[in-house]
Length: 501
Image (tube, rainbow, N blue to C red; front, side, top):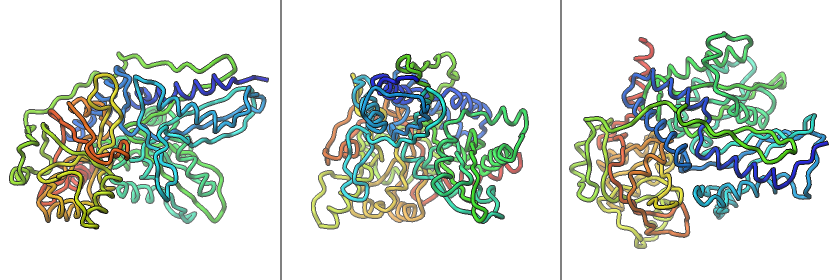
């Protein structure tokens, strides 16, 4: 019989979530480095370079890999011979560990993203609790723990269906992946759950993402069962879609495909698919009663020696003097370095702005001839102007785009991933532009932000409207004033090239 101390368990949870906020799993980094080496698309290679440089910076500075520090998930296998020295529940102890992880490490405060009353007031809990906890009782006297921090951009792209038993799993995946767009920040990992029931398939897909990246080892030795055959087939065919890093078109969309299966009903073929983004974050440890877990930090020399700098064709832009006439000269795919003042705003701020305009009330901010950056930054520590501040998924703001462009004088937007047809139509109609920053490079992007202040909706926390002053912030013209989108042209071009290769 092993006794697990409450204090050891809570400390392990807290330390673990801090650890994964700034350390990528090394298997993912090594796989991404190999993808960088073989990438032939200049835009995709540039994006992967930013992600790799960001990863090393976060490991060195102990700051979050992504501004979305994720929703905490804990998978526990508790031995039936384990005792606890507390009358608190597992959920209560996990939540205390998460609360400490997100709020108590003063040199690395993490962003609170969890909202209570999801169908109503959607009020931020301010400490990222409650966590999502899965518990399984197993034989033995130890506690096996997997923790993961899952960002909203990739989680929102989760898919589920129940196929007919005779339907093709491969066909469904290849039909579905392109509908996910780039909001899940590829290159990443696809987790697939097959069988069981609806909720079991979803859990299998999520759990599969905790496994090591090993597709290249599998390629070398060959498949030994149907699941491994599916992994190899899907890895090749998903990458052949040409979606590429950040959806810009390229050779690598996924660095691995993970699959777990379970027996199912004769009439059913449930299948779930959940992507893991470029901010892949998870860790594993075991508690045996001897104390809190100690996670081994990766060595900086094990990180790939990749650097990033703007290429010679990159244009410098002064946001304080920019005009709509100037933005109309930009073409989809152009790379820019932004200097000057820009505004921020995401879901909650856009809803408030839209409501004020609908009521005919004055806005608290003048958007004329301005750019808005879709971001919810991490709080600053030390002498930082702001914490990691990478882009959030732009498609969530599509429903507000016509209102913003037609009624506020806004001339440009910055976010991550593609825009939908409705937003592209509005952009072309008003001859505005949409710029893309790299998702998964939040700390790197934040280094271009020289000052930050909240100027409206302070009560919204990270969703408040800020004014950032930036210097040489790297972006790509994703949709130009004619409505041409690199997220359409890029993958189309690389699908053709991959077919020839």
